Image (cartoon, rainbow, N blue to C red):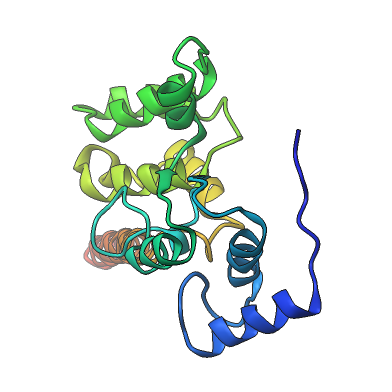
Length: 219
C-alpha cells in the first residue's frame, strides 16, 4: 500500500536551499526532484534501505552508468545509516526482487532495441523499426537506448531520413527532450540535420546538372 508524503512549507524551504546550492538532484529552475528527495529524507525511518527505481538521469551517477548519484548515496548513508538500492528500470527491479514475475512486453522491447543497435542491414533495420513502432510506452532509459542505437549503428544512421525510421525516432524524442540524455540528444539532432543538409546538397547538384544538360541541347 502506498503512503503519500505531504508537501510542507519546511520541505519546500529545504528543496529551495538544495536547489540554490546546486546540490543534486535536479536541473534548471525545477524544484521537483529536490522536493522528492527531501520528502524521502524526511519520511523514511533510519536504518531502512531505500529502493529507488527511476529513469531520471538527475539521480544517476554522471560518471558510472547504472550507479546512483554518489552525492545522494553519501547523504543517505550519513543521515539514514542505510543503503540506496538503485534500479534504472522496473523490469530490473522485478527481475532482482521477484524473478518469477515476467514482464514480457518490456523484455520484448529491450530485445528489439538491442537488435536495432546490432542491425547489420537496411532491411533488418526497417523490420525492427516496424516492430518497435507497435509500442508507445517507452521508458526514458529505452528512449536513450534507441538514440544510442541510431547514432552508433550506421545501418540506422545511413537511412535516418527514410520515412519509417525518421518518424519513429522523432516520436521517441518528441515531448521528452528535457528528460533525455543531452549528449545523446545533441548527437542525434546533429546527425539528422547533417543528413538533411547532405540530401539537399545532392538534390541541388542533381538539379544543376540537369539544367546544364538542358542548356547544352541544340534546340
